[in-house]
Amino acid sequence: MKNERYLTQNDAATLSRIAEHLLRMGEVEINAGEQLIDIISTSIILPVDVQRKGYVTLYSTVSYSPVDTEEVRKLTIVCPQDANPQLALISALTPIGLALIGRKALTTVEVALPSKRVEKLKILDVTPLDSTMGELALS
Image 1: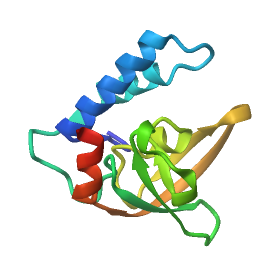
Image 2 (image 1 turned 45 degrees about the horizontal axis):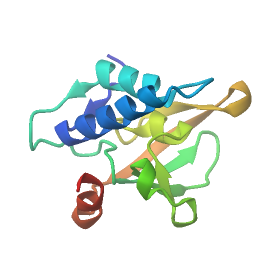
Image 3 (image 1 turned 90 degrees about the vertical axis):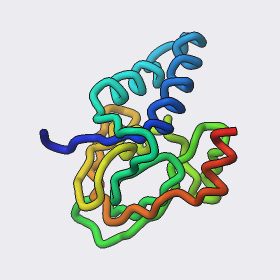
């Protein structure tokens, strides 16, 4: 399968709780809860305490570059309550968060942006989560 997603048990459980909350809220237009459910249902869920090296997880730091540029950007994918764009802590519910979660380093992903634009990004490197930060989200 091209561009498979792998989710840890913890990430799948956390994303499921977020999706359930969003679906109950019933946001209008595009419901990120439905997108999360789609991501979870089409991902390969790893066994407990297993994490694949080089795959984007919650609280991992991702270095990436827009395709056809040399510019390198870096961000950390976090739960919505921990997001802080000024610190490059980006919610998993943002278009880039939804596109990157579960993806492997050195692959190219498409990010669906507002106004029906699509940006292609190459994932350059993934640094695993900082255990102290992950504990904040899971508590």
